[in-house]
Image (cartoon, rainbow, N blue to C red; front, side, top):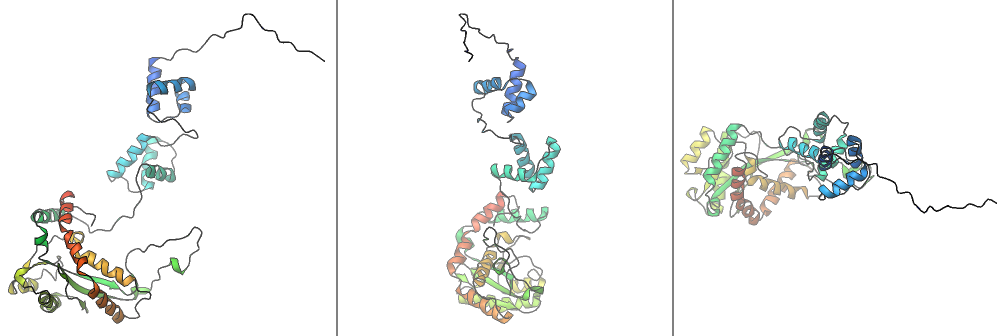
Length: 356
């Protein structure tokens, strides 16, 4: 057997450092790259500095930077994310696909839309469905802003005088909007996940209604096409009966209506003048500031609670009448109490769209 022996030198070898000190320019470049979010590996290849030197510079000059958690470096730097947020705010891009295309042009990198979606969520953004709102021209925005300026001094007592009126369409088979439902992972398509439709929507009814601070007024079903003659007939009957029910006279109230041609027709204008009504000047394209729009939503929610759809339009109208009569006055009051906030929202938006 061989016997190995280890010789111990009385003068141990002490290696001399051959590392050259980094120049100030290289150090500053490393600091810039660190602050831009570059990884140590990327900085090493860009500057030639050792990972140890880079780590030391990070600790000494950039202690506030978070330490890397390891793994593959991120494709998008903080500057890239800020750029993405900026083009979204400036309306140069709406969705992840459009943002991805812009980032590819800027970075010259292959970036997936999924990567962009993930980074945007981490930056506090979330995807939402665009709300449908009437198109607002410059004239519409000016009219809305002028209306808000006129009404900004209104108190709640002033708003209590307003009669809110409108027409709406109610479908026999569901609404025109989206319906959401919870779905289990892997659950196949079934009747629970499907909103059944028929050609022409199964029919609908049109109704006119009004709302006071004291509660709802009379509502009526609109048969056929509504023109100025039919509108004035509704004013003669349902409106006047509503005033009588709530013990009010035309001099007590301000009448609100939108700018539909039948509402602003010469015949309707003469009717209001002959009967002593003050009509509020209303800006076009402004359903968001009309609280009765939310009253219709409340009514349709109650109709959606029926287990089975109505078998006929007559049955649908009977349900509408029944649910309209059940609307508590507190619902009307809560909506009317929102008017100062709606006015303030229009002022903030400078006549643009509001959240309402």
